[in-house]
Image (tube, rainbow, N blue to C red):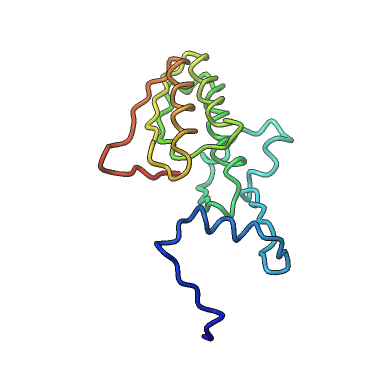
Length: 158
């Protein structure tokens, strides 16, 4: 490297500052935006009366995030569970959720439908701590049992 390619920094570079580099208008140097694919077999769920539970009874599915859609798999699963009269409880770990709270709203709907809902909410999700606290409070207000991650450990889950 030549001297013009070397930059000395007074401290460690933070990820927040690195994000500013990605915001520079050099679109020809950026990867195209990624759009997750619908999980094979789940794509037609919104267009038919087929139920996600019926699909997974017949066949196992492996979902790989972020390449396949969280919305068409996990969110659909939780939304369906919230409405299904045979489902009695939903228990899950929340690490991050979308800004619109689609998954949170499905869990609240499940609680409104008299299902037992319990969540572990990780408060140490980098850059999402404040958001996770807000979502946890909303869940608690809806009567959902919320447990928080451990102080010394990070609970990371999808």
